[in-house]
Image (cartoon, rainbow over all chains, first blue to last red; front, side):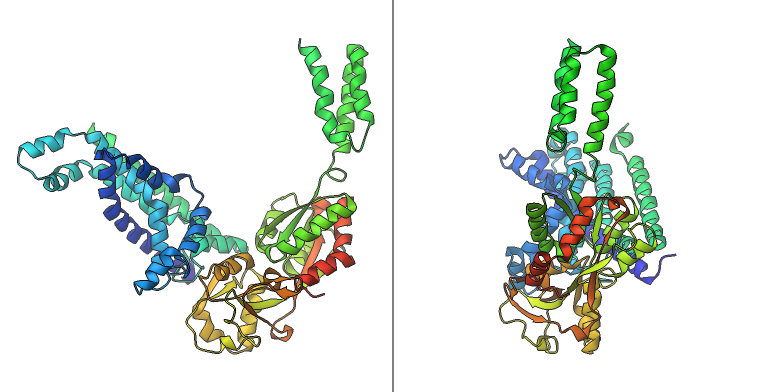
Length: 224
Length: 288
């Protein structure tokens, strides 16, 4: 049975994943649109930067975030100047880290969907008098709905599973930054294997459920 | 011509490992060039056997030492001296004592454990994972309240009593003896309730140090060995916490089951007890 600190960690993790996923959809969708349609020569560069968290170990990301978010780091100076204080060891800091960390998992499926749909639907919308913005919201987004779902599920799941980054910049504060993965780690370190099993088993079930959902919403199945 | 290829291959394959300690196998390996096939197989078997013997961990391999994070820096210096003076070498792995314990319980190939506490080696001995009677206290750790800023910490630690809004980094008190000592110290000063909301916890003392050194936490309880070189605090300001505020941080070493019978492991333990190793530890702020 999970105790109250486990429940705190679960609640915190769900909150973090929800906020992160919403933010990622807001930022990621326009970016995916740009990446899919732009002919700019910066496109490849931006695409590579977006994909970086796929190949970087989370500790690298966490290490640089710790330095950048700190009071003497560039981001830390900015947030202090804006009156937000220092973001490390705070929930907002975790959100920033998670958004960066889960970026490619949200942007890439959406970008693929936009690329796959091609110019045709938008041209048709334009001949019917739709403005580009109108066409984006009434044609492109509905067509990309399965991809948006996939992206949300992936972004959410990836944030839930995040460990290295939160260990580096979270500070392991109960109720503020101690998410499930860190809680499991602490249980194992303290040799509380029963509690570790409870939470870790839950994570396995959750991951399994997520993969089932991904199959159910797979874009190619929808289309056929 | 596969036969000829193999003849050439075998001595090359074996020599790097045995050259130093055992000349005989090399000679044996060359002999079959002029021998009958049966003899070749026999000699090859002998060569293989001799190779296995001369390369067994007791003789040729470095001592694998698991080292608690707070002792990482002195351990590196001591290992370098050890290699220079004895010709044996020590391979160091660093981590939180709790993690090292779990790894050892699950078959990690360490010959020696230098723990951050006295309980873990004792427990390993009880459970039969360590060699009975090999355990001893190699150092007594010191706790320090530290900031990388020059005037942040006064020499009496009064800064803790003053109102301030900075984070206080400690090692997880549940997992690390330095974290537990930090909590004991705050209890002794009756400051625990006011300080607890400001805690940020590293999984071990190395991460607690990282939190302070990067400026993300204004103050931190870290190991003296992390901020002291040659008997002086290197950067920033510090309050060396007096011994009576917390239980002594006795750090014990023990030979593990995997290191039983290893001469190099015993040599390493003897070296740790020696004057030269102690001088290194003292320069990093450890007591005995």
